[in-house]
Length: 172
Image (cartoon, rainbow, N blue to C red; front, side, top):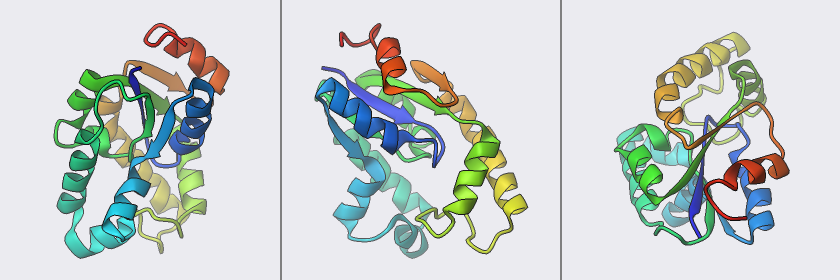
């Protein structure tokens, strides 16, 4: 069965929704960031600070290209995965892509609360206003890539609703 790639900004719910979706479909689930951290034995932030963003983006591409088509996997991509190294083209050619389009203000609030988490592109000392500005700018830069997804979901969605949308791409 086709792989499903969940794309969107950090804190858009890719991992949470992905796990539940995989359970409902009888698929396996993979979080790309967690997979990279396990393989590298470093956090994403440590990779960014030690080897730089370019090295991290190369790791993302290598990880993404390690997924073979039709493996019945729900994959929560990192927020930037579709935006670098022609990764969106790979995603589109190897499965069904779903863009979780969460309101940028909601994302900013979630990310500001989670600043202690593994978010390398956010300065942990930033004010809430600065975080919101950074998120908005990043979102605007990434949106053209995200909008290439097969399915776009605006706001919160239940697994039942997503299964209904996926039915046109994958017999569920």
